[in-house]
Length: 305
Image 1 (cartoon, rainbow, N blue to C red):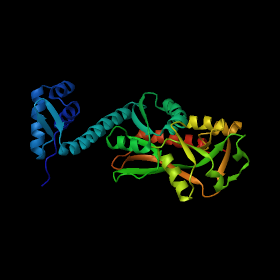
Image 2 (cartoon, one colour):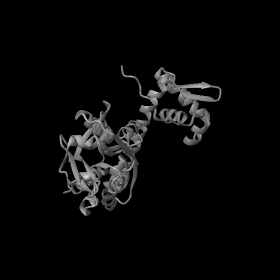
Image 3 (cartoon, rainbow, N blue to C red):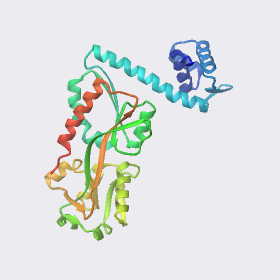
Image 4 (cartoon, helix red, strand yellow):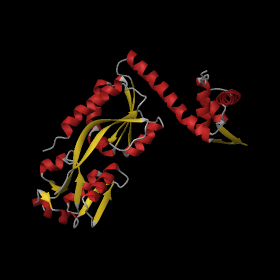
């Protein structure tokens, strides 16, 4: 026999107390009396047969069972909120909410163009963008803080679904006066004598570069880790080192001749970009349109001669 599901009011009360660590503040958030919140929590714990909160005097903490139930409860409330927004969007075209996580590179080079067109189509849609490393953003997705994540392919938990959008190649960029400027393919021996400028150490890009160099047996003299693609390009321009970037990141500099492309003599390093979402969640109409605009923007972005 299937157990009766908790009442939505009980779930809201539990989440409010867990987040505020206070029955008083939870009651204020929900516009209820403190006794009503306490009653809901007691009923919920009795129904589940589990203790969700530890109450020691005025101090309230979430138990191990509570942590599990809290994660699911937040997701339930987030899905209900999203459903309400989507229904409202169907009534009033262009309204809704979209919460996107994206890497810093996508936020800087892809999203401004895509969002400009998206705003024209959905002028009343509420947009939230969170920038970060792919792995970090997937955690936010699991906590229902984001609806979708655009990032680099990585190992994902069972609940997460990855859909490929495009691939790119990482290249070396140098100033026209650099000794590598005359190389079409850089000899392996020369790589070990040069300083490489690589994106942030905690990023998927850095891990991919290190793994690729390890596979080729290269030992670097030094690798400078920088938290900005713009910084990498500027350092490469003045000859501090060799930048490791994607062509679409350095489009302007490559077209103007401020930077030149060179590649290692060996296998090239490709990355796969795509969409991460919870496997149980379908895309809304607004999200499908947003991703379609991103796909069109990408097609014009990644083809750099």
